[in-house]
Length: 477
Image 1 (cartoon, helix red, strand yellow):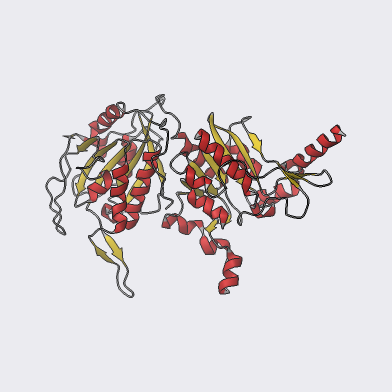
Image 2 (cartoon, rainbow, N blue to C red):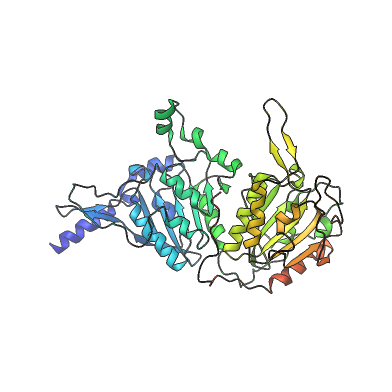
């Protein structure tokens, strides 16, 4: 009897393996996708995975019932412990029981382990054993969190990465929206109500991507990165988490790739600030976030002398580097991200200031140099920022533009080191307000000496991840 029970358990578990579902695997691969287990295998280090929840219940007749709709694991990425979860869209539409995921969120919270989730699916469903079937559940809730309150609690405490590579609606879309870093692939969709709901309510029949396509979210700021396919998404997730690891060890080659004295421009020239960032950072270390949203401002993770930093930079090639509502929102969320995970910040300033835009029907877009409530958000984010920020004013920092990039100079958010280049604009008065630009610097430096100053300054600050509680959450926007 014991052997029969063990054999039945093994058969139930084997039924969920890819080798037992060749037709499903073929169908998934034909769409240039990976199965749920292939996703996790590619994400985690070899031989590191510990599976959770492969069995959902036992029937009244003694039959073991495998979990449906997804897989959950604990493992490592570059030897760092990670929670890894993937829905399985071919199995019950990816709607697997929520109790197991809430359990893993609790484990992530206790240990401060990062979480990576594939969340394509039509929403959560009841756990496999349904009322009245007489099943003995093995997948009931354990711990303090449900699947929806766990992710908000992790916000600002342990990194959460979500990957959407298909239709993601209802509860799945909520998980994606709560994440710190959201990656998607072309043709995917993220929305609260799927096509059937829209058709039932409005009578319009739309495909998932037509309704809430990731391409739209890329421009509107709803996702952080759009990549070609699932393999690229996994590589991006691994790279994002690489900046979270302790980085005391110096990189093999941290010499900058170019001399800034050779690529800087005169005060009136247009230039691409990407060149400045690449010259200041370690080779190959710049990882830009939200590159297609609010393109007048660049946000990126990078390294200097092997140390993880967050970089913000005004982009003169796009709208002259102005800070509109979208750019202000992009600043505030990035400051929160860096502050919670103890990344020192580098702010490269070259902006004519803050503007508000609006569209009047039948007229050209209007532009007004003013502040909105969106522009207040970076100032609040800087006010609660405790990580050191180094600022370099390349040219202009008019009005309150520089303050949004660094915090107000009379508060606790004042930069730890404020540098200016010889091309920095000194004493300019904003023609639209009574604000006189704050042009006090700790030093004026030649562009070619900038990295050397930043590098030495960063060595003085230690990362403080051992705090007993989180500072604040990270805005979901």
